[in-house]
Amino acid sequence: MGEHITKTVSSEHEHSTFLSHLLSDIKALEYMLNHQLIESGIARIGAEQEFCLVDDSFRPSDKAVEILHSINDSHFTTELAKYNLEINLDPEVLEANCFKVMEVKLLDLLALAGNHAQKFDNKILLTGILPTISKNTLEYHYLTPIPRYYALNERMKELRGDDFSLHLKGVDELTIKHSSVLFEACNTSFQMHLQVDPENFADSYNWSQAIAGPVLAACTNSPLLLGRELWSENRIALFQQSIDTRSSSYALKDQLARVSFGQKWVKDSIVNIYKEDISRFPIILTKEIQENSENLVKQGKIPKLEALNLHSGTIYKWNRACYGAAGGKAHVRIENRYIPAGPNVKDEMANFVFWAGLMLSQDGKYRNIAAKMDFKDAKSNFLKAARYGKESILIWDNKHWNAPDLILKVLLPLAKSGLKKLKINEQDISDYLTIIEKRVKGTSGSQWIINNYRKLNGTYKKDDSLVKLCECTFEHQQKNIPIHRWPDCKLKLKFSVSSTIEHIMSTQLITVRAKDSAQLALSIMNWNNIHHMPVDDGRGKLMGLLTYRHISKLNTPDIDSARVADIMVEEVISITPNTPIKEAIEIMKKNEFGCLPVIEHEELVGIVTIKDVTPFD
Image 1: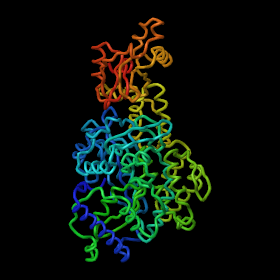
Image 2 (image 1 turned 90 degrees about the vertical axis):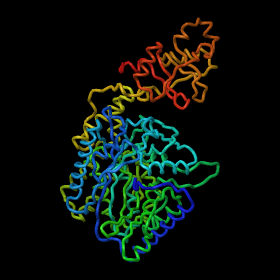
Image 3 (image 1 turned 30 degrees about the vertical axis):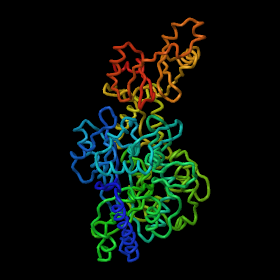
Image 4 (image 1 turned 120 degrees about the vertical axis):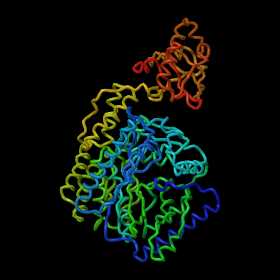
């Protein structure tokens, strides 16, 4: 998430001062490009590993800050939510066994994090979207208590002018409104960096866009959100919608989202990307900057371009252009942000080798890809891959390919040739690319998750299945074996009395209205084999509760003439999704209730019955 010491724009003076530094950074960058002051002729790789923290019940933790302090290692930093942390890996020169070296270092850092997490009865989990994230864990109190995150949340809401809305549709459908940016925290990724020569940046960046769809198709690992089966890689749609600052209106306007694939090929140089972003996206965050970068560069010093990097950090391209300065040298790189975390380190590194190999293979036929491929084909490929994973039909060389054939017949050979050009260890090339081959021929991360979730759902309640899925994922990750070799989940389930009602309540509700006939209500109950039915006003507000016991006391003539309003219970005791299961059990026993409606923000969101809580009693 970048800089921590930031704040929202609170005055015209602050805005003007920061904008001045932003424009100065553009001029400084142009000066460095024109005078060959940006490093060229060497390639380096880097990575950022985001990961989830879960408690003993495999639910999101709130211990990120405490665990970070316990780790006390500069490689680690916070993320938006209290159940995420990030590892920033040291750069490696792209040569010989650099990928194997990075894998070993990443495993060591994850082991370090795991050891410190255990002190707080936590575990670490690599997954694109944690299956057990719930509505409760997306509330404001799960926001990491750091000024940058508060400022980001405040400014995003201000720009939006309303609560954020989500609408995702796949096998299932999710429509919900939320009041903070925390839905963005559902996303955890393995972000890959590749340093490129500045003179070839535009062509390299365009190539990264062209290959994004097929690469993503091979790497999807995030098909679930709040227990719903949606896209094969939900992060793509979720990230855009969770921090979408665009407002809707009756006017037809073309507004760009701050999270996007882009709208066109890049021309000339990296500077044009930054100019486009400054032109289209308002400043969200500022910070105090001491020195003018244009003056620094003309004094022979290499500036950090702090304003430019901060502004760029609030615009979330799936392929992001990056500028960096270290050791008296400046460089430019491409950051791949669309690859999910997990399902394990071995698979992540295989993804990295596949992507880097393709990036290095751009020559001859694929040089100047912007002149040979329609940008909308590249964007369409990316969106189809996010929706359907390796079941996608993609456009390549103006032909339609199913994703596995394109990857196996065209892209894997290309990646292999690109890696060989830089003399990467041949055994490493074979080992990592074979993982991609086996995964494409076999089971992807998304497919394994969906297959196991459906099997579990055939026996257990939804929440139990999600917990089980996380437990099983954790066990397999400890072995660091690729996803195509993972067996199905077979462990016994564990029930947690510390869980809340949110985890067990039924949300697919069947309701009636007060004006409906009792006969209709009885019929619906019989058809669906249910004994309790909420009565609402048609807009989600609870009006009463109807039970089979009340209806069964009526004689046939009475049923024919009665309305639901005549027999429903109007004084209803309800609970919230955050009510502990133990407390709900006590309420039901004390009052001899068979069910309890669940209310949130004065709206009926679920119902819990005696049958639901029996395993916890």
